[in-house]
Length: 611
Image (cartoon, rainbow, N blue to C red; front, top):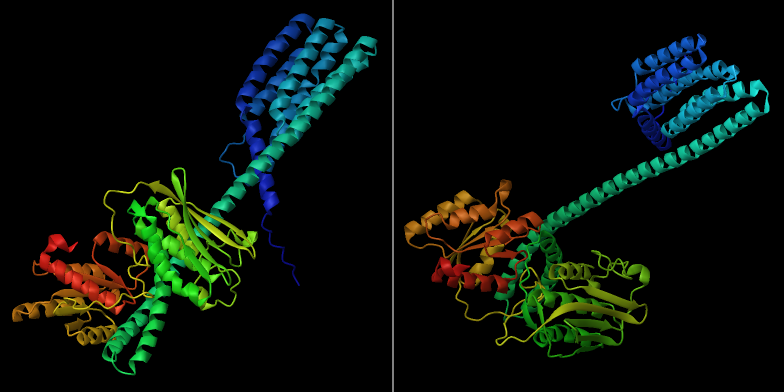
């Protein structure tokens, strides 16, 4: 039975870090390699000439020749370069240590050639040269301890032993001084080597941490993008069947309006609208992330903003036996009235959800150049460890069972996004069991001579599916409507709804059929008044492009209404830039009829008024 050799194991993180540190040490030592070698050769020639001229000892010439040969070898031997792989660092560290040790051992001979001559000036010069050489070399060889020891010890010991061999007091004193200097030099070198190694390890560890942090940030961004794509896809796929249900339900509700069965149709539509409201909330997040919502700051009268909020939440507070106080202030602020309305609506909605007794108070106070709009409740409060998470999507306090009555947990995340968009900081203070206090800081404004009119519906996506508009009487609806949608159920549902309102409607599944229908209607002299088009058609066809082509096919711009369940940020941005009117699935019947009527009027006034 043969035994297979064990496979080499991958280097550990500590081993890899050690190799990187060693490579930096080697690079530091080799950085002055050529200059140091040439300088040493020149110094040897000068020093050797001076010594020989004074002592006339022929053996010094042999030493000088040997040292020059060693220097020549050092200069021309292969050396480390930055292109060498990291794994070879240990080899080059050993080689430079052997090279400097060789030079030092050749130099160690010279004290035995000079000291026995009892020439004190020459001995003093020798000691100065060796001490200076050790000091200079120690600084450049700190990174590699073997090289430091290999260079300083042979020549220093050669000098110390040569001095001590003389035996008299002066030479023994000089030998002891040399030994003390050697020990101090080595001690300092070891300390500097340790500091340098630790600093390099800290640097590389910080670089590794920064790299890991970058990877984690990239992974977090990828996860966020995947979450956005998932929400967009899931929301679109849920909106499609819900849109058909809403259209069928609206047609059924219209047909059964004055019959006993109509109550069941109303209940059905309330459930559909509640689900639509949840999807609209997710759509709001996508629209904010996509940057398709642009604030339009203007002077806003807070009392006019508070009044609809009071009407919206009064019934709900009464149902929970809570007190709701929305106090007038007479103040004006500079903000977007629609987006500020949504911020405060979400804060009040959140306060009422988590308040079981007591009540909710909404006030506004002037503070310098700002106005503090405060929403206070006497609810369950927020623990300090949870305060950092309440603005996360889908995070809810004390709702592990995901009670639908408490919503989706997106309201405060929308508040945070709107806060950044508007530049209105939101502050939160809470005490568990005592309640929570949210404060929105808004710039103060002076009352204009003519107050702007109009407030936002509750949803950023248009009219909220959960708060339908009241039916508008005597709407001037289009006489003929062409619908382009690739899903059979939606075509049938839309046809049922439109025909229940006496609208002559035709539905087609693709652009070619729509073009044929438009041409046929033109030949008969009964053109369509409105084109409704789904954004995402079969086989990847872009409904926006198709609708624009069809609406302008005969040179006369026909009103175009885009209907979509799309929530992708990129596509939402593209729809916004097109300036084509858009409704989001599931479409509320009253809202659809209202927009159709408005587009008919705009089409009659001409293209300049249609925007």
